[in-house]
Image (cartoon, rainbow, N blue to C red; front, side, top):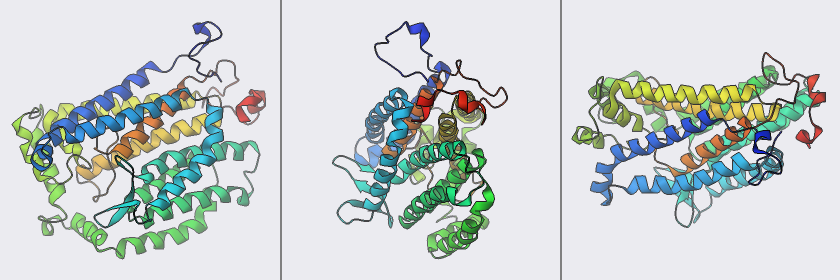
Length: 402
């Protein structure tokens, strides 16, 4: 696997280039997201905070940090990243625990999902999405190579780590993110072809636990009730959803543009965050919605192709996991905005205002860019999947797994 060097020791032709089309799709998604945030938040920011660029400025500052993270994960050798995974896991768990410490935690609407930083707040649960992918990618690579596929105890560490993170996020009163992290963990089990039956005891306990968490919080019960009885909660739990649907409908085919036609979006609480897709749909119309999904599909297809061409399982699993996080999170957010599923707190990657989200999103993109530079031409690769088979792994450079 080639390693990026600012001053290569040999000719540039001997180094595999990053996937340009994927990088372009990342820049497009980020650029459209910033533009949409300006369109949707400027009126509200000016009226409430006296600065129409308030949310855009914060997003740009966070994006600078995010692009530094992107460069790190795109440049740092993957072997080095693997060695950092234990540190990342424990550090992320510590950050999650800090959300319970008075004086450090930042509480909002009864939830304590953030920690106070000198100039901003950070949401550790966003980082969990990335860290859990890297942990599972590394774990299942070693798990398969050791031949422990028939040993039930060998998979126990992965289940313990997953349950720990999910439980901590649930305790932060971030139900939707905790459930999403659980889903990503199960997705990693699936792509690694681990025996899902080993999760059966955990599932038997998880189902009633999730149901208990739903029905012990009044607002969660009301959200479900509002979803199934929309006419009874028009001025409360369905207010955002109905306003969002009106905005999408108003957009029509060509959209309302970026002028005064978007003033009604100020009636949607948190439009700059969870419901920002409604602003994009109203401004750009059906054509804009098609454009968004076209870029998203290109983004995901390129990421999957990169994963299938990776020479080792860690890189392939990590790339697929990062792509899954961004894709499923996007679908979940859009589904909420369109009223297909009950309201959740899942943000739209690249679009929603939130420094933690954009930083982690760009870091995951950096990992995928790094994976696209993996030089697999010198390896024996399974033509069907792009992943080296069990027998072929013996032909790979041993330095990949140190």
